[in-house]
Length: 73
Image (cartoon, rainbow, N blue to C red; front, side):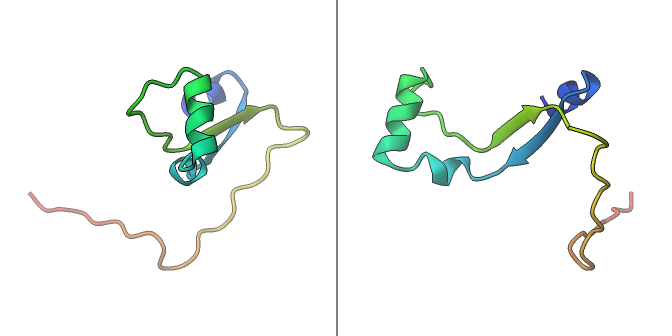
């Protein structure tokens, strides 16, 4: 979804707190009202919109947060 939105010139943001957000009686009611089938779990949100002005530059990664592991054949 995010890649398709980017191709259309639409900005996006992924928020990964879906399970916590809907883990309440009110959250379950919302999902029911929206027609989400029983047994489904909301994993994350994808916000879509248009960026006003230039797209923000990528923030630098924190050291030691990313590990690339290359496997030998």
